[in-house]
Length: 383
Image 1 (spheres, rainbow, N blue to C red):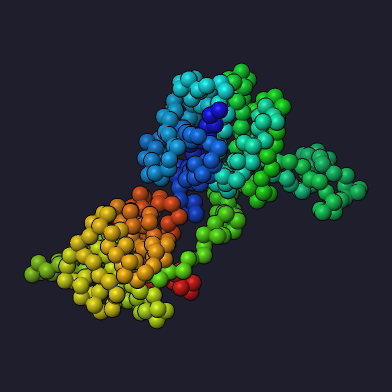
Image 2: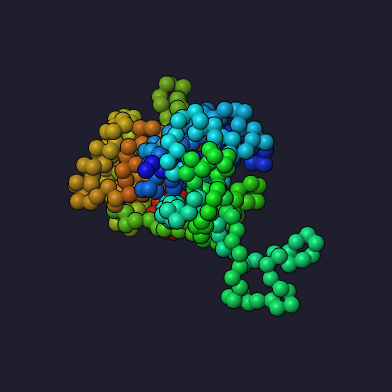
């Protein structure tokens, strides 16, 4: 039986413009729920339904398997459009089997993980439909000054209070047959899949965004902040060690501007016994002279696209290490393969979108030529 995940993301948003592709913890917001769905083994296909070409291109740049783009009708992408309207539109236009398990996922819940989705799918067999909730132990009052879920004359201690279930909007699971018949994401005997209490936040206003990023870093990304044991650090040149600018003297000589803070970073790596390398697609005496001054262990020039990965593999063979023990920083498409292969990858803040969307890449705060390599090394050395 097929299981399909459906993530509607429209281009319009009044509270936070283009929020579905706004940077959230280093990735476009829609990246996180898409990643959770893709990593869920029980999900066969992930559909991103959008009215925006810009969103479509960004989602494609994730290079996730199982993901398909559906261009939704603009009439169902208005501020007043219901989510059910685009669900029914998609089902009708694509002849989806009535037996299909259909999972609605909202992109504004980036704290969702594949573990949550797998749990929800697993309990569907006992119900007609399932939704995600969190258990809250807040005391709720009505606008008339009446407590909704406790007796204020006998206020319970938090540890003795059962609390109540709060819909967090992360996901809803139903059969296509039920959705078509009831015109609703939920129906029949409804089961509840409990998620951690911190996932209650939904991103509707900028204040929610700030809170959600903090929770993401604390609970979801906490294991990604620890740098693996690195034995070799390699850097690109243009756009990393330089600002990628092309400078010429009055005599027509080519010039490049480097940052002295990056020079100190190479020295610190040497002091820690970590090998260094520079790999660039250009071939100039300027870079050769800079590499000599920096005392790098390896310099390879004139290496483009896949050639960068191959020369780093040669470095690994010489040092008897694996790619997992290599850290690399790059900014352009000719760095893509290498950045995707190493154990610790990072990019400057002004790197190309395709590079920024590499899975698990670290987004640094500085731009190329502004000391971004020094920032990179600080993370490696845990300074």
